[in-house]
Every structure is written in structure tokens, then in C-alpha cells.
Length: 181
Image (cartoon, rainbow, N blue to C red; front, top):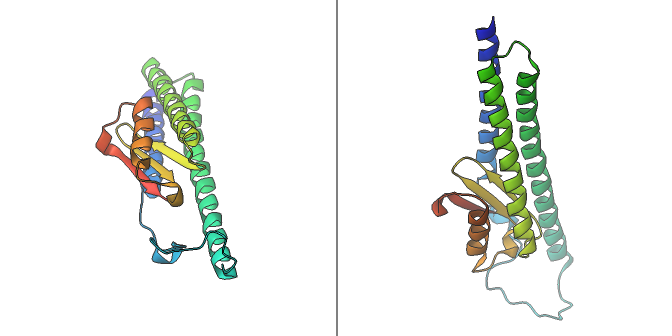
């Protein structure tokens, strides 16, 4: 009976981990539709020009709305996956029939998840202090994906982002991906 419960608990933890990896994979897609680009690179505009059309303003606000929705959805889904993993680990700890080994693994996973959440939050706060208004960081064991607003990127932004990630965790420089939203 104890073996079956242990297998169920381990299978549910693996399912939660798989869900987190899937969510990470979904948000690391960096493809951008040509329709979503609001301005062309190199297009000249006047600083005090009153000739901006209502279509341009509507298109920019539509893109901003899509970006806001993306960041809200990504944060919600990441938090939901973390909450599910925490609940599964807590259930393992509550089961009196669970072995000491299963309880130890659950405590280790809770500790690792807590460290990951703190690290993600630290990276996001560092990037916000560096001038990025919205960003989301998704970490795995040896991979990091950071999503930022495309129009906030400059020539040195990749170095700033990678420096922020490297200051908080030990991930190979090449395993840090920047997603433009």
C-alpha cells in the first residue's frame, strides 16, 4: 500500500514538473507576426508633428494591450503551475503513510521551488529597475527565458538582461533566451 501511494505521489510531482516545462516552452516562442509591428525600422517621423493618423494611434494602443495581456497571462500561468506543485508537495507531507524518503523529497522540491520563485522575482525586479516596464522570467534547472517589450530593447539590452540573470543564478550564458513581445 505504501509503495502505491509513493508511486502516485511521485507520478503527480512528475506531472507538475512536466506542466511547468510545457509552460516554459510555450512562452519561449520568439516568433513575431509581421502584422503586429507598429512601425518600420528607419521610418522617419517628426517630433512635433500633428499629422499622426488615428490608425497609427489605434494600432499602437492595440499592440500595448496585447503586450499587457501577454504579461498578465504569462504571470498567471506561471503562478498557477507553481501553486499546483506546492500543493502536491504539501499533500505528500500531510500523508501520514508517506515514507520518510518521500517526505524528504517533497521538502527538497518545495525548497527548490521556493528558491526558483525568489530568483525569478529578483531578476524581474532588477530588470524593472534597469528601465524595463514589463518583463517576465521563467527559470528551469539550466535554462532561463526572459520576455520583455520589444520597443524597450536597445543595443545593450541583451547584455543588461543576461547580466541580471547571471547575477542571480548559475546558468550558462548561452542558455539565456530573450523573448521580444
